Length: 158
Image (cartoon, rainbow, N blue to C red):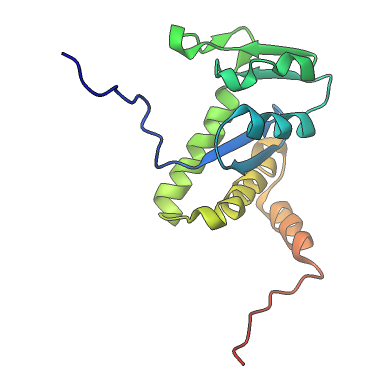
């Protein structure tokens, strides 16, 4: 039977986010207009060291990433490969799992205009977590240091 092409995925309603995580350390997330080489690779190049080992899924976006780092390993989910030795992207998938649960369960709505703020919050939480030896008091101190000297002002009607 012939008909319209079947669209796979179902991500038309989703915003594109790039998150880079150094294992055992911090996360950095970026909202991009679309998940394309021209939007993603400049972020990767600007935020990873040349001596880094980059691990990604099989997306074509990262096809030439090996030029920008010491090594580029790929896990091929389409062939049911999820881990190969220490090569995996489970770390970033775990981050997105926490982010999605927070967005659905706590915040329930986020406009695209403010997405970068929500990403920054989840980056902060991930980068300052118990597993890294940062307890609640220390995390609160770090957060308060980040706002020291800054004022939140509101526009007053004339």
